[in-house]
Image (cartoon, rainbow, N blue to C red):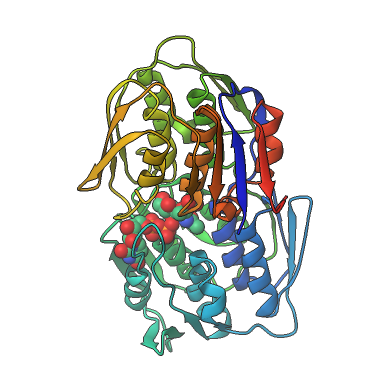
Length: 422
Ligand code: EPZ
């Protein structure tokens, strides 16, 4: 069980270089199973979730190397359509391999992922959409089994019941190899990671358009070919460092970012009274005046990202006055609130809303992190608190933040990690 020990009352000042986006790299890596030529993906962050995906790719037959942020994938002798539950159970995003593997092997059997600490997280939209596209799918013994049909319909439309990021990615990737079929996904998620996946697929010869809007159109092609691609910067990592700058009333610059992807966060920071300066690929946030409480609603993009919801809650708990944070994506993403209250925050959750009574100072405590973004929230809360904070069960954080200790400590934090994961 890893622990992060955070020294409090630090003021963060300096520049952090942002890594490639985990949540863009994962679906792109999943899509590579449909390509039986060499593929090179650059700007891939060295993280636990990425390593899990790469080891699955190796287990099902791909030849994979990963060095200095560059993943090279080559076809092996065979490609297996089987991804057992012990691998999917480690990381839900591995279910994104299902549709691509059916298209690549003619069939696939993938363990059905269970719930997790932020909610139930079913895959019914993935399965329902793929069935509409013509795949024959049955669920048996905890697995999802799928087969390719004799032929695909020439035109299919599917409207997602909710703007699911994973289902949009799964459906657009799978459809790109449904030769001669035109597929339209409505109420699609619009996240930048989906645009990045479209760009990757098109570079490999697919014909996908509309990503970044709520309607995505795919004209299936016969084959995808090898290509080179570089993943976009991680907007959630960038947001985390900016919010750490704010909670410590510091002055932080993130570089190598696409500021447009951070718009909802930057608008919120401006409303709170922070100074925000944007240039081509950097954003600076500085606290010069007293900060104000705000109301934030975590929603699908372009709304405020749910992945920053625990982190903005930590910041608002240090701003005097009443703030509200609403969570409209996951039903159970406030699991960290009791831990934050142990640090002296005053947060009450009712009906997917956190009511926060801001207090000037949090106090360091021993706490436990329920998931990746909650871990980040508790770590940055510790930086602003009086005394020392010990975050138990902190290993989650290494699923999503590359060189976390090194980056934070280079701008004035003092984190110690046991056992050292970096
Ligand atoms: C992606 O998860 C991200 N993960 C999550 O990031 C992120 O929080 C989430 O999108 C929302 O932005 C990756 O990209 C690997 P969803 P995903 O499908 O795709 C419900 C992080 O911290 N739903 O958009 O799994 C679901 O339960 C992680 O880096 C169904 O009901 O999220 C949820 O309430 C955590 N049925 C909502 O939709 C389905 O078939 C949105 O989930 C699919 C989803």
